[in-house]
Image (cartoon, rainbow, N blue to C red):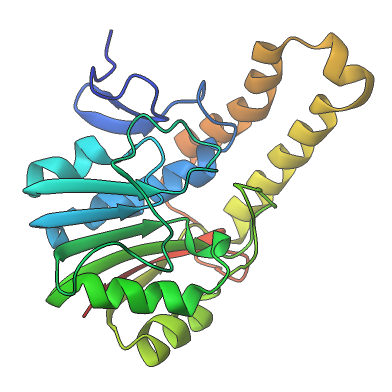
Length: 244
């Protein structure tokens, strides 16, 4: 009864005016919660016409739409996500928009899936208005997730090199998504998920019980630890806010 009507299938939920991750919709509660926390911090930078690259089901629409005049989501036809929310099917390497069209571009957990990340960033630079903002996140230490391809991983240094030096954005800030402790919890839960999904266990354990076994340790961890590990050698990923 607390679910947002405009996001019935999203893994992002709003409960009592607080955004959180639905354990029923994803096995990666911890990683998605860490990303959500950072996304909420980017809201003050978001404005005007917004482009969401690789939008999927637009899980962050409810967060950003009050701060924008339009919200355009693009994705590829072969995406494994539901496609009802997609406005335009297009490849990020060739965005079907004129130069200086958008005030904000979201590129969240997409850069690892494209064949030429630098070319995508140059296209984003082209369609962004001068002085406007790119919000980008990418994994650093995370399991393979073919959606439809999983090609790259990015450290903070790698993102700085690609986004700022090569694609000519100015980075306002770059933050890690968790640290070594969060990586270990995520790794253990992913390993449990694999074991529960294969062999005899995969056949005899009900799907709901499997999900509980995998997600409950992540939920309890988030309840017990409000702050992430300061050691970011094994960060799950990074988020960047950059300006054209």
